[in-house]
Image (cartoon, rainbow, N blue to C red; front, side, top):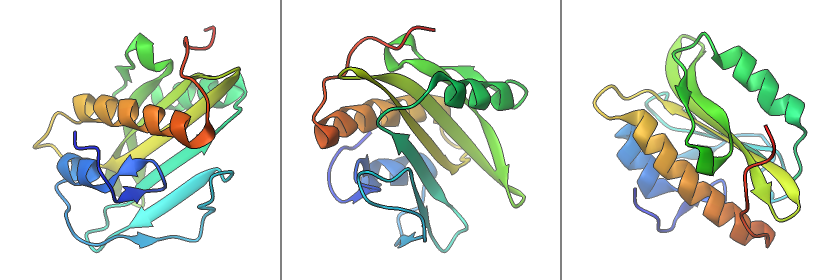
Length: 155
């Protein structure tokens, strides 16, 4: 995965999203909050490929538990333990197929959360790609919020 500017939603490299989805065109920002204290960012493009990321500097356990309950019957894949607690799963939006990854992890003394959703691309190993993208996102997230990545939160 390529990690270089420009970045979508502050900490996701556009080049990495292009590798993952196959889409290399322009993106348009949606109406959601896009400031570092916000919680979500939606970016769309001409191929109905929507890139969504959500994040929270201090997230309660119930948020990741809700996602994991939702995801358990949607082709789930385990998240590597070093990324925290979470899952990778399928997710459909308006009949379009997406793959999403959610991770709840330590950033300083807080339990942070990042979720990334991209259009499914059967030509790639998207689970591997999403794990690599989450590694980049967590590192850049820690830089953005000035915290050190630590052990995953207790399960």
